[in-house]
Amino acid sequence: MNDETLSLLTRSLNTAMVLVLAVGLYFRYRPKVHMPLMLTAFAVDLANVLIIELGRGAVGQATEAFAAGDYFSQFHVAVSALSIAGYVVAVVTGVKLYRILTTRAPNDPARAQRLRRVHKFNAAIFVVTRLSSYATSFWM
Ligand code: HEM
Image (cartoon, rainbow, N blue to C red; front, top):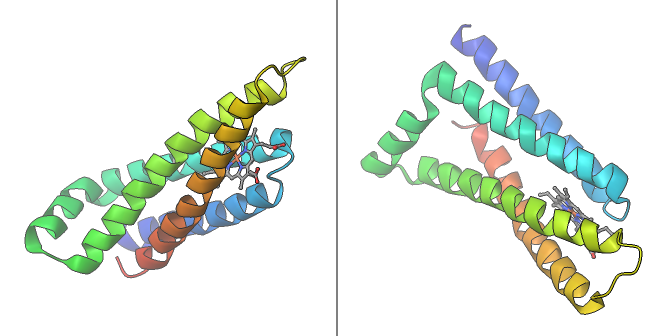
């Protein structure tokens, strides 16, 4: 695959997943719609990192950017890594929340409240990091 095709593929996937995340956020109070959409975006974003790594050695480039003190690339790498961490926190808190919400007799409303607060706080940070990663990806 040449560089131009690779770039078109990864940018298209990136854009598509931002849209999937937006729809998933819209359906945040319908877990049966929200969860599959968010998990799809997570899986495709991870696959995209793998495609970029196999195509042009993203990890090597990121290491070089850090070594060379290229602040813009460093920022892109940092917000992209934070997005992945945000996905992990979202899955962990989201699954726990879903288990509580779907228990026949929820016995710990305080825990559900706590999880919801963490999930929501993480979501706010995630939106900023994921959009920053998306915006800066076009200059990479
Ligand atoms: C990074 C991706 C995600 C973002 C940005 C996100 C965001 C949100 C937001 C903003 C809410 C509403 C919280 C509130 O106002 O109380 C929510 C609810 C929820 N999310 Fe996520 N979420 C993400 C991923 C996930 C995943 C992966 C799961 C589970 C696999 C999940 C499960 C849930 C559940 C169960 C609720 C509660 C719905 C309800 O109260 O009826 N979320 N999410």
